[in-house]
Length: 231
Image (cartoon, rainbow, N blue to C red; front, side, top):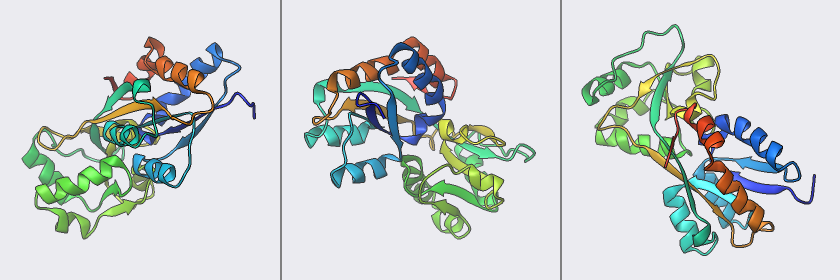
């Protein structure tokens, strides 16, 4: 691997559109290959706490606040990237329930044989609090399918769940499923993602250039195609 390789820690939410973004980056910066470690924000924070580092990092806005406060990421390097709404997915031939309002959404979850969500991802952590808020945590969790990390929609294909909950950009990473819509008002939580350069980055200037590149029009077009919006 080139000694000019840029190392990036990034959330899974932008992995699907990043294929096109990375190709565009390599065309513009052929001497700067990227090595990307994809994980949920919670896993990235744990790795950093254990001493791991890279050149740049993309995590939730709240996690970026913490990394900057800890002196691990340069405050003046922070770049606001994209917002990501949560949604539901089912198999293509499934009859999509009404999820247009909070009451209908709640009933759809209760009617499901099994709802899949991620325990480690930001979407799953929020979903657990939402279930408690809706007072249906006990009923849903009695037959829920949970995964430590990764893509919840894969459990639809495995026959282990009939509804998957995650960020829409992550649901779209899995071929052979359909997104039936975003969570309705009152249930929705839009997750925001920020990028920054590590204080101990080996290639700080190039890392900053990468984050600027992610805000450019070509990159944002790729993000938009996967349900993400520029911040």
